[in-house]
Length: 276
Image (cartoon, rainbow, N blue to C red; front, side):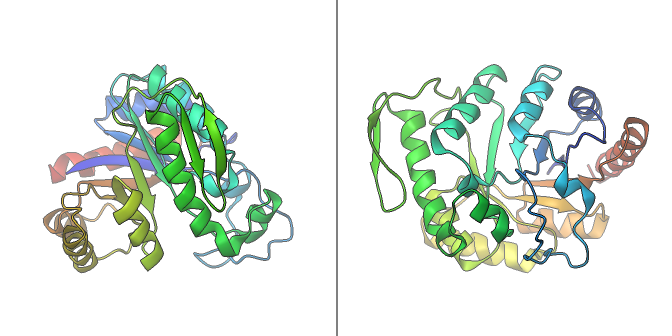
């Protein structure tokens, strides 16, 4: 099993280039970055973890700018989004950003997507929270066409465009792996239809991992890679998840200044080294 890091990179924490070098030096295989374009002041949508919304949500750097900076200071680190809020993004700009990052990094992108939870944030982007799942499904289909066809067109209920040219194309073929975030029935159906990997949150049990793997096999989708986003460094839990078929654990790195971040990464690296 591989080990990576998930985190919120903000203007108040370790800088991207330093973080990337530190991860590669310590043997982590991947980095998954969270995304929020902004946080509406109304705060109507409750924070899923309960309590006040942490400060980091208000201050995240753009994930693709951040990962591009990290690409320049690393050679092998996989560059992931965990998750990109595609339903709040322009489809064509996102297609170009992902493909550009894949190009400059030499094919190291893992594109994690999800529907999000902050309804006010979605509405500010003109997205109806009630139909965001259907929108995401069409966006994923359209993205694949933009990445793989010289002339792409798509005609759906929410995404509709006549033939277009969109370059660059990604380095990875047919395109960067699309990791689907979420554990709901809708998310799992999306995974079976459009995903290349699953990105469930911590708390997903080994029993659920086995159930989903069996269900995917019934859909003709055996051997879908699975990465736990923000796992705890617990040896028993890690062993059980590995036995159930999880391919990667990412540990949630708190957003801290450089020296504190490096010390925390050392802790995670010691755990990963002992587990291997």
